[in-house]
Image (cartoon, rainbow, N blue to C red):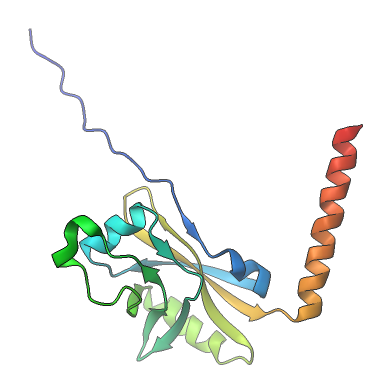
Length: 161
């Protein structure tokens, strides 16, 4: 009797590295999804959750979108293949039309490009959610905190009833 051949199981990593400060410090006007040029050990480190977007930001230079300040810890088992600097500048992959749109938007006063989330899509590629953002003023942050507290209190009162 012939055995049925089963397709290989794919294990998806649903973990995402999120820039929590981004939504606190900025008004997100628009978001984009970009691919990243990474080395093999960097991908393994990201899958292990060993990356940080806290100090990262993006710039457009010579028609290319670059991620600056994203820290990806070296992957220990592949020590000899790790790139030198864990916070090196990495190139992001976007369509030309999206890059042109970003260049036009970034010339507006006060707009910046910040990384929001680093994740793996269903095909296993590392993707980065970018946000076109405007910085919040201190009073905007206070207002947002006040609204969040009011919502939490209302939810608590509703649950208590």
